[in-house]
Length: 468
Ligand SMILES: *[C@@H]1O[C@H](CO)[C@@H](O)[C@H](O)[C@H]1NC(C)=O
Image 1: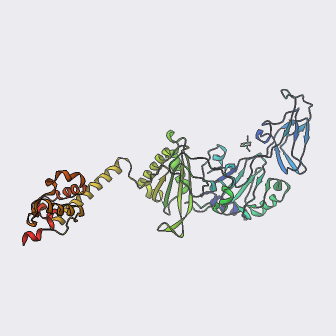
Image 2: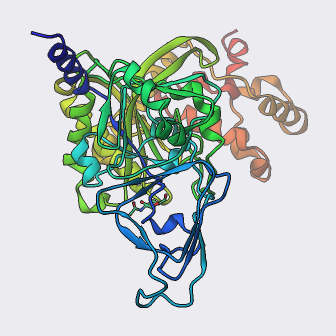
């Protein structure tokens, strides 16, 4: 047999792993209202004008009446069967006086503009508009992705960037899938190809797909500058906005970081989160993006010493981030219970409210926290009592106390032998408010009931005098 089936099989195999479909949104279709300056497709009494210098490939699906048409110097119409233009001298009903309609040139068309792409896991999801949310870098086609230009559309895309080539796995356009490099470069040099793809960088197909079931790192961080220069960040309403890896703007919401084992499958996990949580009515407004990212490791949080991959889950709720935090907890709890089956070894999150998963939450966390706290306090008390009883530990001498006592000596009682018996607390009530440290001391002393006599710092210093 020939080699072609093997090649196809190989592509099918690669296609099943972490790759996504990225669909280009704008088109240069004659029938798309947003391509006309009046917001309407020209009528039979209108003059249709294309800017003279505009290099453009326009897709036409229907037959259109026009009064007059001014064409660009370089350009083309792609006509489906039955489509075309005719002059009917304004016979078409409801057409009005007639205006000059301009095919617009105002829409942004940069390849690296995240707003111009839609992402989906499968072709049918693309068709049914079940789009996935992605961080900005991953909204643009990654090297292992399949690029889709909608059926029955033409387009113009500006590929200018700082990189010479833009590698992708396949490109689908005008009803044909290009997966072999030479075939696509031949298309690019055709007349239509040159009108559709303008700009300095060359799109190349035939890049291997993502063969790793746990996902692949997108690789668009090299284009971070080009991507973020097209993005305008909105204002945020939360206390501590978070910055996801690969995103151009801060977000209000939550970011989960998941460490994975060899049995982790990104696509299955994406579907699991979707079926368990995202379809719930309370999470209707949630946008969730999940991908493998390359995170730089830092020694003591400062010194970079390499990178390691993890799964980043970015959750936005369109508000202050409370809902996103709830969902983050749901995902963490699911990972705690089913982690070993899912191939998750560790999961944690940060929320824009300032909280994170290492803080205790819910009743279970509270109970554990309280029990631990009480045990810790009890242990400390026991140790303190034992140490104090064995006279290993002495209460620290209080400077203010000593000063007070020496004043007392001179003023009231005189003789040093009396020191063991006077109690400054009771002797001079008028001085009490000035001596907060004394209150603290007496409280600690009360703990060791049997040993008060020996450990009270008031007496302590004179014990030797006493025994002598
Ligand atoms: C018309 O073009 C706009 C912007 O380019 C796009 O968002 C929209 O989906 C297009 N409409 C149709 C019907 O394809």
